[in-house]
Every structure is written in structure tokens, then in C-alpha cells.
Length: 242
Image (cartoon, rainbow, N blue to C red; front, side):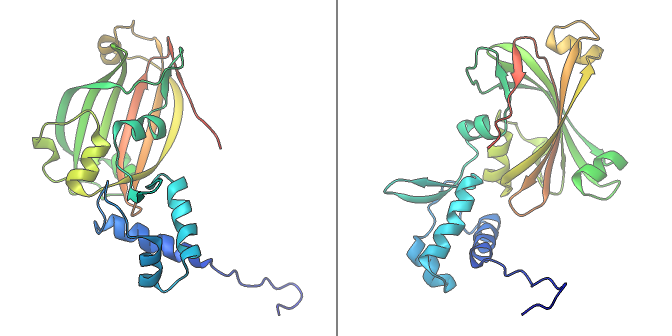
């Protein structure tokens, strides 16, 4: 029993350890996106815990959208399909309220060395090889976003030489085993420069919303740094809080 003024040590919930084991196996590719996990009974027997403990761990992974439960069919590793990306990571919504997944047009793909800012955001050494992607994204046929995506070359070997799909997060998971689990965004009002104004069909100086996002993979690695400059006439940024 803790004495006066002492704090009793915290007991780590058992399901947390189960969750970390499941996350590690997904990150290591034991279970691929879209693949069914073993049953709760099989996981419990494998890890030497109760089915209730496994269920609690899966409840948390489901809430984090890392796995998907399908009634009567089992639990599956979540895929970064368009629907999941639309509701979890794409927050620019037409004022009409109808969610639409944007289409993309790549402007440029280039390799460069990490400067101090990129090194800090991506957690790599200064001078490390990077791939930088510039593209325009359209919502409902209207150019709405100009964005710069920067990733570590070592994390996605060959990315700069291949054709890039609209849904990059699905590509990361399917081709490179990097599953995006979470993102942190910082928002700021900025004025459109000449380049953004040209691609968005706006006058230079038009207010834009800058969304600066750092995406983290399921294993904790920083997987992407993305800066999106968004027009807001007819569009708004929607953040749904629990």
C-alpha cells in the first residue's frame, strides 16, 4: 500500500499490450490491407489472453479505423480506399454538404535533398533524399487545391519513377507496406501567390486556407508531409469532433 504522499504505480491494461501486438503485426505485413484477421478465439489462444481482452483491443483498433468489423464475416485490416480517405482524411467539403472525393492532376515530381525544415517535419537527417510531388486537386470539376507532398525517398523506393494514382495513401499501403494511421493538421489563412492563383483560376492575393499535415504510419514513423492550399469560395473545412 502506498504511503502518504506516494503515488501508486499505474497498472497497464492487458488489452493495450494485445493492441500493440496486433498493430505491430499489421505494420510488419503479417496481415495485409483488406485481409481478414484470425478470429478472436484464435488470437486469444495465440497470445494467452481471454477473448474479452482481445475484443477490447479490437474495439480500440476499430475506433481508430485501423480495422473494420463486418457483421457475420469477421474483422479485416482497413484499406485506404476512397471512402475511408474521404471521411477520415479529406476535410474540404462543398457548402452544399455533399462529400466528394477529389480528382488529381500531377504538376511535377522531383527528388531533392532535405533542408532543415523538411528534415524536422519528416524526422530524417538534413541532406537525406526526398521525393516532392506537386499536384492540383479538383472538387466537382473545379480546381480547388494546390498541394505539395514531401516524403522520404528511402521509405518509398522508386516512387519518383512511377505513375501516381489519385489515392496516394492506398498506394503507400499496397506497394510499400506503409499504412497511414493518423495525421496532425495545422490551419492558417494565406494569400495566393502567382503560381497558386494561376492553377486555381484566382487573382493573386486571394485568401486561401493552408492545411499543413504530417501523416504518421501505423508503426509510428512519419510517412508524409503535405501542404495543401485550398480555395474556400463554395467550400469549407469540416472537422467532426467526437
